[in-house]
Length: 116
Image 1 (cartoon, one colour):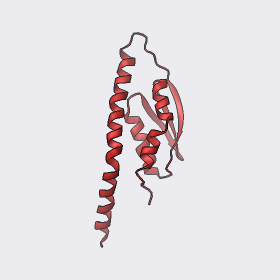
Image 2 (spheres, rainbow, N blue to C red; image 1 turned 180 degrees about the vertical axis):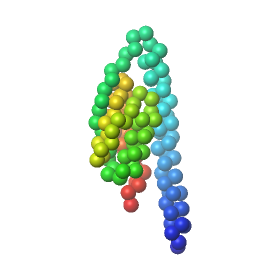
Image 3 (cartoon, rainbow, N blue to C red; image 1 turned 45 degrees about the vertical axis):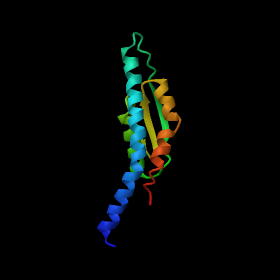
């Protein structure tokens, strides 16, 4: 089997593993958009800016980048730093911070199994 064929198989397997992550992330994007819209449109602007630290479950830098980018893509959260598997994340509300602390995003990215 040649190298191109092996690389093609790895990409195909990765795409199948990415589909559940993309579906979950799409749902999270919709929920976060509604939460941020509610905060911005309310009279009292109930924000509670918080910076939290998250430990990535995977030591793979690509997995950590996917996690950080997924967090930043979600409204109300921004990954400020990623150093040695620890992500520093700014959250607009306590709700978004609690959602990240639950660890679901880290578990889903770790399930990709990017490390050979």
